[in-house]
Length: 448
Ligand code: GLU
Image (cartoon, rainbow, N blue to C red; front, side, top):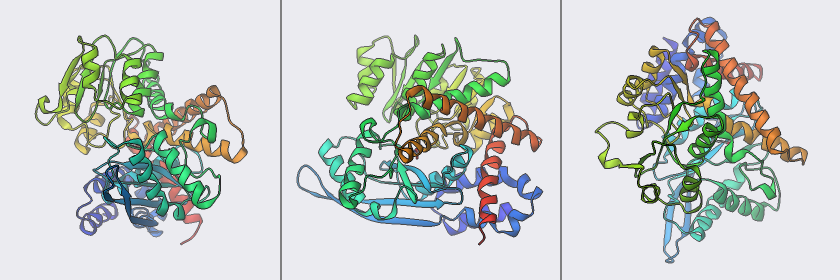
């Protein structure tokens, strides 16, 4: 009753925040056995307090485009929970960004960061600004204007933003430069920084590599591996690219990638060098990949079978949703299972709908929910903070080894917690309860 009441309450209080309802519902339903077992969580009104951010900051961002016209966007930073560390989480620049999206991401981030075992609270921010099609100078002016407000809310021990969709090395550079101009401080106030000015090796690779390490752990428990297997990947940003790279390193064959306009299916395996050139350096559409590789199949979004994502219709052993929220629905989940998929490891945040997750759990395939499987990115952000604080930088191998052991640890903890609550293959339940307990206990110990 307690859990259901809270879910009802957020739907009534925030009727338009659909993605936030979805994220809360997924978590709270799986927390029910832990709440029933430990009465203290209800006595201390932990759920009521955890679903409301500590602070929601919304601001106007005015900037001038290359034609001299004044543009107006909205900026957000939602500081969700700092029970176990400073607020930590990315910034998303995408036209779909609104307060409901930022709250869903911030809520997920609290539990994800807890799972990493590092001392990181949860937050998220961003803007409805679309970097796509903008010049470097426009992106710079937008980032500077965004930081003109954000700087007063962040700090190495307060709130440490990073990247997310639409925010990569270029944007972090402009944001950091402006922060430094305003405050005259060189602080580890953002992560995902450039290597010459406080960034960590393996941070760009971390989310993708971590997601594949997580899949490896899930499969290892069942005596399986990725070697020699066909895999599908959605997206073509940082997460997808380094998922593909790690899959190749492990002897698997990734055959798909996608963007906002369509998807590519390269039966012999995605040409990673070409993908990087088109997406990382030229910022072009995947259609360009298909033009250069005529044997590769390109399907435009408008040609996808209605209500499905064409990526999930390609037969595979393991699938890595690495694009965005709700990119994999019940129909897609059915397609994957019918085609023999045995493992889904989520590089994106909340890529599967609630119905798709239910089906994955019922089918008992290996299913790694985003907040566990994609925690490698923020984990290496935590390692970047540790390097900044100690004024040392670690070599690639050290960071990568740390990342691998963090991912192993997240799997073990999620799996042990799932076993403790009698549902051994349910890593949704396992990761949600494991992440939740640490934050909730800290809140109780720190008083009201
Ligand atoms: N945006 C990433 C995430 O969803 C990384 C956040 C960070 O590094 O702070 O976890």
